[in-house]
Amino acid sequence: MAKKTSSTRREDIVETAAKLFKQKGYAATTMREIAEQVGIEAASIYNHIKGKDELLAEICFRVSNAYIAQLTAIEMDDSSPIEKIKALIRLHIRIVFEDVDGISVANNEWKHLPESALTSFKAARRDYESRFAKIIEQGIEQGDIQKVNASVALFTILSAVRWVELWYKSDRQIAPQVLEDDIVSLLLNGLQK
Amino acid sequence: MAKKTSSTRREDIVETAAKLFKQKGYAATTMREIAEQVGIEAASIYNHIKGKDELLAEICFRVSNAYIAQLTAIEMDDSSPIEKIKALIRLHIRIVFEDVDGISVANNEWKHLPESALTSFKAARRDYESRFAKIIEQGIEQGDIQKVNASVALFTILSAVRWVELWYKSDRQIAPQVLEDDIVSLLLNGLQK
Image (cartoon, rainbow over all chains, first blue to last red; front, side):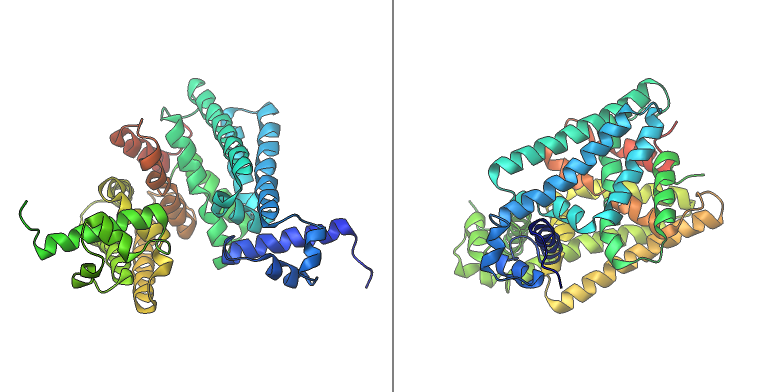
């Protein structure tokens, strides 16, 4: 087998860390276990990564950067606030299918980030939330969205899509496309016919 | 000050445990800390409670019993599936305002329940979920509810209301009644006007 390049080895370490942080939690995972699962010596993991908190930061920011990049693209789009919100709901569902380990770690383990990374991560989340809320407010102003409190709408939507992360591992009897279409329909048109 | 009766002392212990389990997590809370906050000797807490896991079980089942009692009342009601679902959504929001510590512990710390209690707790949750899903299915059959996958609708609703528990402590600028009405309106009628 060809020797792995340093960059793909690093990627293996990050992916393995995401899996273990998700399964066991950040606090209970050791660098030794990550090295073992990757199949390298415990000491040589430090040739690639400074420490466990660097791994956590890389995973959390990979997720928050993905959300913000997509949000930026959606904002610049010509579509209506309703179409933008549909795109954002689909984004939240799809990103789980693409990176379930990363999403789970960013959702559940971010509190363990070291201080300066924690501050940046929270700022990124607030930025994301306020830009999403602004789209809701624009929809309300333009008369396309119900007159509700924009924060309540924002957190109801963000919270509503979070179960997909938990569902993804436990039950795949529902096709991803059905899941996505049903959730968009429920949040946009409501349960009631 | 009159000496507290044994039953109110026990209630104090349970309430204090719920607060500490919520703040620090179950694993990080000690019986000594609970005793200290109640204002009794560390040893005498065992005159009232067998151990930390008894406290956790009592809190978790207080919450699951409250949900199931209300669901039973709503099921026996004469109203339509849509009205029943509205009542259930309002229940989920109100119960947070009534027992935020208990809800938070039942939502986030239940995994620490000892084996037999864990099995019962999970069974109670599955029972609650399947009875809630049945109401959604009845609404779909009767044509009042959109044709969506009932499990997707169930988990979207249950997940959507979960942020209230987190919001409750961090931001009270929205009146509880506005919160309740906006969430019911969003889930029943959708975001789109």
